[in-house]
Amino acid sequence: MAKLENRTLREIMTKDVATVTLKDNVYEVACKMRDWNVGVIPVVDEKNDVIGIITDRDIVIRGLAEKHEGSAATEVVMTRDIILGQPGTTVDEAAKIMAQHQIRRLPVVEHGKLVGIVALADMAVRQVHHDEASDALQQISEPATH
Image 1 (cartoon, rainbow, N blue to C red):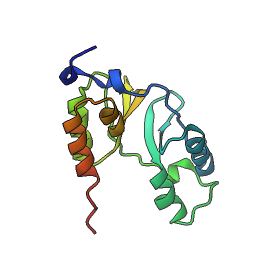
Image 2: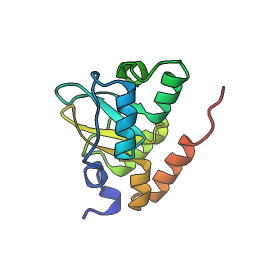
Image 3: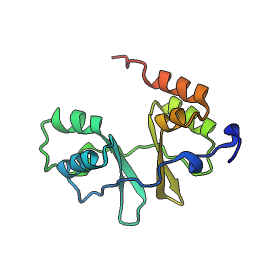
């Protein structure tokens, strides 16, 4: 195993990731979240390229709060402008990226294809760069200004 400061996302990422496509609707996304016990699902195209992401919060804010029904298209609630990581990205670099962009989860792609996902919790639970993960979580958890 690599020293902590040299650990990469490939070493800590979750490789078995639920995905949805633009053919799925919001209800199907919510069911998959329930079944997989996750709060985020990457949206992929037919080539498994990541084209977006949907969080449980997206379903509430862009779906329910905007009075969209469960049959609404995935693209109605998904976030298209997403930040992606690479398997060779160090955990330290990833924590800084996540803090900078105020995100808790980072899809990991190789040659555009989804290969995994990393959450701040993965960094903390695995005691990888605890200080960086804690700092990132603290920055992300700060209340938004209106």
